[in-house]
Length: 447
Image (tube, rainbow, N blue to C red; front, side):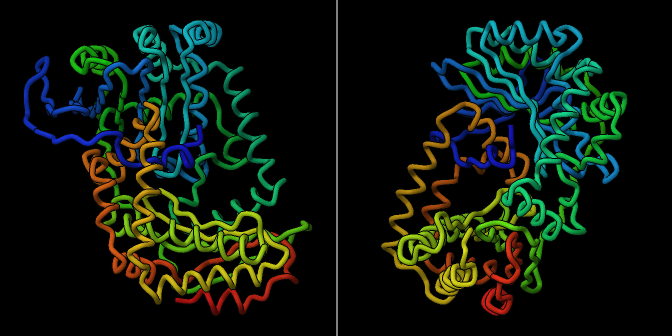
């Protein structure tokens, strides 16, 4: 599971009035809410349960805080490596038994890591949730780290790392990480490097896993037709004996770009691959919602101007990531990058200089309403959304305000966000250096 692309959904499926009060449940402190989310604590482990009456499936995610900051350059990728091996089998359910049982009941247990957190994920039918929970907690708490699994997963990761530069898209992303995240914690790539993955041993993975299993560093989110009170007993039996530890989140430095730049990786390709990156607000920032609208408007405009009107590229784009230290970007593949980028930068200037019309903003409301509900159709998406807000967005309750915050965005907010963030673009390019007029990129991209 690639969290960097799959864990971006925001919002909640339904809105409810929340009533909060502290009540005792099974001798522990919990927060009772009106539907849909119940929050409680099990020995320092924060748990969020969203009950969806009648849902035929259940999804759960055990999230590990810290992301790439949990590792050092010499063991980069160890968290992703360890969790990927862990879900291959536990002490009660070793590999062959786990594969047989998950196949029999249609359960999926997986793992993934991004810059900000990792997850062990479970998806099962409601009917098989009890047995699936046993398998899930076994691999989460008692992974066997069998040598054959370690070597197989190592081979998979190394193949992906070594093939990254085979495609222009992969080369572009690698160059972006190297330049944009230089001297930042994100320079420690979640998947690691060929050197770090090659040197890690099974004992290293096992020791690292034990270190992660402290309740102060974990978050458990469950979505489905499950009774929170019954589930709390299961969680206490499974995770209640874990050490609390003393994990404390530390501030993450934000990315700031003082001036534009152009970095070119020469490659013999038929078209040039271009990405212009600029700083963006994170989900915890008040500017996030205005910037989301601004990026969506920019995406529509560059598509219309670059592809439809001028036929300079098949798929020009504007996008915003969802990292704690966040960026946005424009991107294009073109045999004429100078003209294509010039048009895209002109559209950025329009957003910075001229407030959007109210009619344009009204059309965006319908777009966000539709995509909002589409992204929340699955339990897994709702698990990801609750976790994202809890881990990076100031708390899961903020997820319930997504549409309201989007509706409150005004043309002046978009204008302000564009001027604050859409400047000093740092361009990374894979292609023919002779096709690139640096002055066009640098002059038009300056703040």
